[in-house]
Length: 303
Image (cartoon, rainbow, N blue to C red; front, side, top):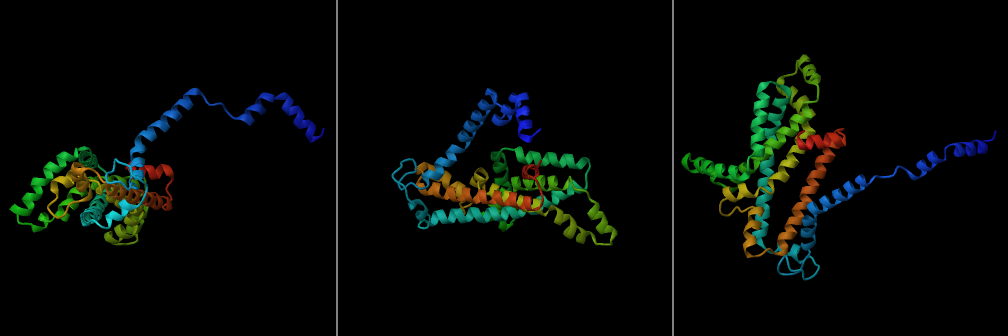
């Protein structure tokens, strides 16, 4: 029997199966409904951001009054020292806060992963408390504390606006870095560290060349996330700032009273791009470390 005849007989015996293979499974109405609902939810969440990006190219005097398309708003940034100062303060404080949060959070995450015990759950509870406490509570608590340190105890550094903003922004970011580093190490066996100790390596050498090397992707990811989280700490910044060191979120908040201008949207667009680049770098660092998409999501969320 020839091959053509065999194929003809198979098609005659199973015409429905062949048709199903050609057309594929039919989607139910519930699948279509959930797909449409998902698209609508995504549009609802991201449409305001898209609108701000579009209006950053508005040449009008006010943000809400569209006049035409152009780059005037971005050029205005170069002509207003107040905007430049606010952006510079935000970037500097976010960078310092990220360093503080990374240093403290890395040590905390390694300790929780490598020295398990009942204390870990108590410590995780404290970190969770920091994470869920409303920012207004943190701000109200920080202000008198920083004033006490700077004026009553005479520690002049706490009278500096950059120091105040950096300390205030690092609180929540430290908890985030701790979650990420712990999530990275808790699933890794400690055999390499034990082998290093068996080979008579000093504890600091083992920590630097083995433990820290294993945790480095999470450390870098935590640093970048801490940086992005510190850029928009509006409530804490509004309370602890001092004259001359106004960060960008507080500047925008004060500009609402006189009417938002297109340059506000322009700077917001630039910061949005900066945040997206930072998140992309986080994913790239974790991917180069060999993590899957699920592992990357777990590490970034501290899961």
